[in-house]
Length: 203
Ligand code: GLU
Image (tube, rainbow, N blue to C red):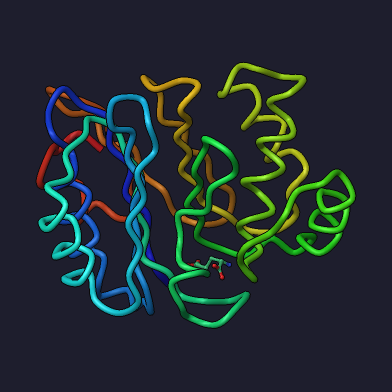
């Protein structure tokens, strides 16, 4: 197993993402990462090993933002390394994913034929590029995620943020756990209540 944390709030959510990942550590993982929208621009940090390493990177860069997604990975497609760690990015949008996309090879071939270049060995990167491609004809992010997941075979929980819609975070699940947390100052999602109790009891 492994985990996802998503946050959108009227405060700095980087500490919320990191504390959420710490609470999910017990599930097991080999690498961790996060992406936030800072002044409308995606910023990503990834680290092999402990969440503490990711925290050190966030501290060193003084990263702060009001919207973001975070992930602990248990590799199923591609070795544990920074290049394969989530989030995966396709030109301005970032995706975290727990689970397995069974038809990722067919999706990857079709996307490569359209000119998408893959930089990781993960099944997840196909989701990011598929969503990017879908947005060309379905510009609303929520609708585009809906269309994209309709093409996925397998189990997933995903979190998405996009520079094109800096006030939204989209989550979806099928077969993998993902809970919504409704807070006073924002909305959250995570694989487990343990990650959400820091911000809300309303899950
Ligand atoms: N299948 C994805 C990967 O290997 C996600 C693994 C996970 O659930 O963390 O990157």
